[in-house]
Image (cartoon, rainbow, N blue to C red):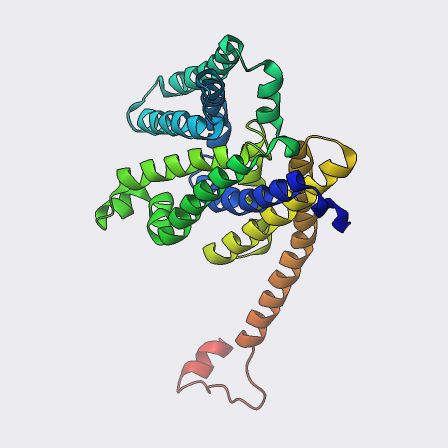
Length: 304
């Protein structure tokens, strides 16, 4: 099993997998709370244009994808604020335009091809370079800094924007920061999971953790743990079976969700029965306790 570490490309892939396993659920927990679980998928479509732009200009596609996806995330947030009846139409045009722009630019690039896009769409462990690991590490540090350093403020905004605004929090700034952080997370994960599947890794570990925990901190910790386990396991599996790592990781994440859900349901019913029994015991009179005797005239009322 340890012979996998003899390959330099697998060492880089495993480092990237750990970083992805940490960052994706760390951002996803806020998106799930805001009922924007599909946002990562939309950013992935836009990031494809950034990847193709990197091939066209001869720069690292990770950095161009960061710039383009961040711009797309800001546009999504602006549409959410100001878009009314046509907001969903504008978002659809943004998503499909990002995908079409990526395909068009990659074919205009002298060094790119549709095969290059496939590695970014579904992930490829053999193409993770030293430059990619450096970029992913820097971007992952930013994501962790935002999601953990501002967790109280982000939690308040995601829970109730109106209450957060009344308390004096910069709601719009925090929303934009969260959108940019989600865009950075997508670019962090695209080399391992792929742009089309990264949204699943942002959502499924969080959904699995919610089945077994109570409270924000415990859910976040378990979601990150699940994310790291499935990304490492899926990357190793893809190495031995020669399958795309993104598909392996997402299938494992869904399997973990199904297993936790199957175990959590009977445990929840058992806890509910114990709680009901404890409440019933609390309402019963203690042994030897004296009940109040009826006052004068009350006995006659009872008899009547």
